[in-house]
Length: 295
Image (tube, rainbow, N blue to C red; front, side):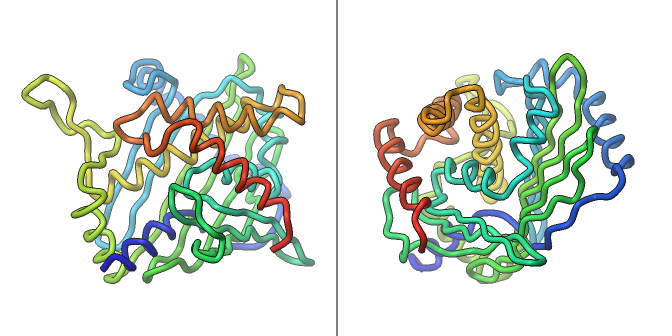
């Protein structure tokens, strides 16, 4: 069963489509996101994350989904320009501890991201799991951004991966983001995850609070929802770290992104601590250099 666990862990990532641009503003989606921002006003300012952020997750018999809503202190034009490009997304995704490689390619009709997902430690690329994601700009206007990464198939009967980022301006030089991370799974995937959760993942938890321990410390959700919450947060922190490094001189941006991502994960050691800073930095510098070469 160990091979099932390795392949499942290698396959936790994104989702499918082609490259298109919205010809008119997606006013309904933008309005819905503004309404969500208004409804979360209190929660964004009073939460356990120590940042203006809300996280939700859902599990059914065949799929998992995580949603993060967050307010960031970057103007919408900055956010839109920074995240409206496949190469930029590779620079975002490589920050995630499980991403071993990402390369964008474009032909006449589609843009794809060749991504390899693997362990949380250094790993030869041939041992990582390759997944191809399509990159789609569903909307890119002066008031709304919608980027979608999709993969039809993953390992162990997983399918329909999606990472979707939506953004709207909300004034005061700030932008409201919605990140969705989801995928479907079959019986093989469920068995692999159960094996992982019964062994190496038995003590891992997510962020949703489910009660209090006798000591008064909060209890957090575990299981498959815990898995999807941890990875949704890792992807969000990668986006935030990428945006935060834009003002840094280009030769120093990679170092800034890596340091920022790791520091952000250390705010949530119960959920996200996997390796120490030096190990993460060394691994990611090597993986980033590998990402710049043709494979």
